Length: 449
Image (cartoon, rainbow, N blue to C red):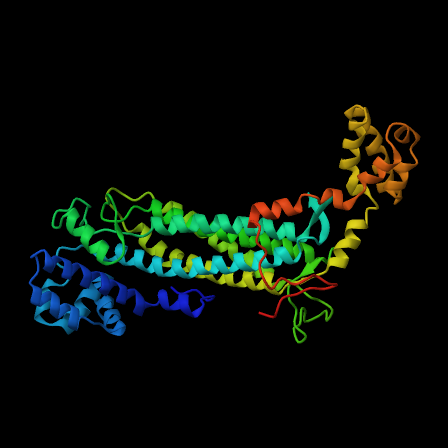
């Protein structure tokens, strides 16, 4: 099943044609290895290499009768190969082919996803540096907390993406295994040495032990890792959706001149791409649960996992590929409004510096309890009456009697709050600054994707 959101490269990987071509690659590798070991006539292996082919339509015709996809495949190939086909699929069980070929398909899909992750990281790095020194309000619980920079927020996403790159590389490597251990995994017809040689020929590792199938903890880990990646993309999209809210409007996804946001309200500029990312990420996370359910099979195998994987592996890899592309474009082309960030930063009239003021009072001999009481009293009054918090503090005789005015004013210094941004960037990116970084203006956006 190829999902609706398939990009061409990923669609080709999960097509019936490529799936059967990969099965054939596994079968030929097995036959040639067995021929080298003297278990299959060399002329038969040569004939299979030269003649083996199929038509997807013919496989479907046979499967409609025999109700077994691998038998339909081997029969369709045998019709073309001729007499030497009796050595085709020799010593193998269906899942020796299917599971090993699936590892190759996932390897192909993983190559695309790994490139997608790298591209996302590159865009996040560039835009993080672009807005490294662009101040904005940091929020906790949706409420103004203390100042940050927009570049700092992007650096956080970049760092998480780097962890996803590492996690995904490990999960993909864990899936790079094949098996030729037979119907219950005990090597009744072949040997571990033969298995290792076939797998090496295919660019895979041999599973140390298997039943009739490669154990599904590997697949669960892989799909769960895709779900983690999708969750990161959901996190980025959700934040951009929040920043695009009319009351906030600090950033928004790209909106073209001819684009329309609502059939009823011409003024609407909706974050439809970010919402799509958030929605489809739920599907990938849901597939992870199905992957967990596939781990527990009866005895040396049952078939309950097979139908599930025909959906969740193409779906999850395809959706992750699509979501990475969408998110990269979202970040690359989003509009950013530094002036609006400054307006929001100033909107609480100094309340966001209450934490620094608290520490300064403590440093000048005020107990933490008394300092908190003094600061909170003015903060709550500023909230309720819409007053300037800084002026309230400067007018408090009790505070002025304990802390010099210069120190009080220093508590409201924005740059004091942001003094470690450079050090954070050095930890995240190293000392280098990528080329081509734009300087933010009133509105900053990347090229249209």
